[in-house]
Image (cartoon, rainbow, N blue to C red; front, side, top):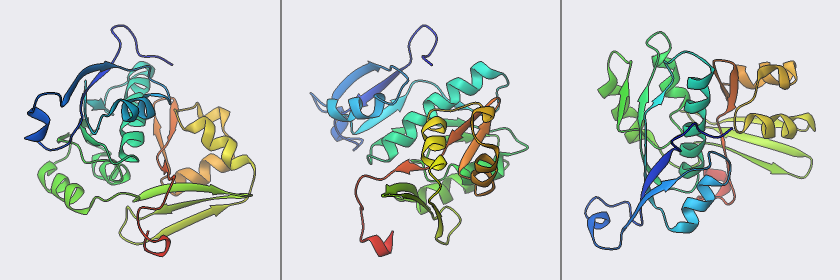
Length: 219
């Protein structure tokens, strides 16, 4: 589902370094988004290695429109994180769920600011110093899929050979209504904190790995 007018944009640079990105030719300007799965690959192909999201990711705002907007931006942040693109973004959390939600999202590139936490600076410090690529990823092999999760400090592996799982993940990838996902699968993925429920949408948190960034046994 596209953003409402005006279209959302990111500001892009060819380099992530604070000094280098100010040099001539490094800025790619404001790039309009389609708000679909093509955005992150297109930004990468354009040469974007640092991106600034145009508005905060607001998980505290009520209503289906707010949930759709937040998930659209989270999709982009997730897919850019998977490509090791530095993302400048801001996160607004509902105070009653803030302490849990930032940990659920801690596989994403760390935000600049977090609002809604009692001790946001401590959480941000932990997020920044403990973040690394492949912290929460999934891969699909012949007849199975596997999720590897290190958000909680240890390695948690989830392997499924039920052919309904890839179909469910494909629906959840951009956000789906819970009723469109088999109930047993959604409950299992939610229990493992692999799905974020926002308003009337459920969203798939892990990003897809296309190649190992470390030796497979170390990821």
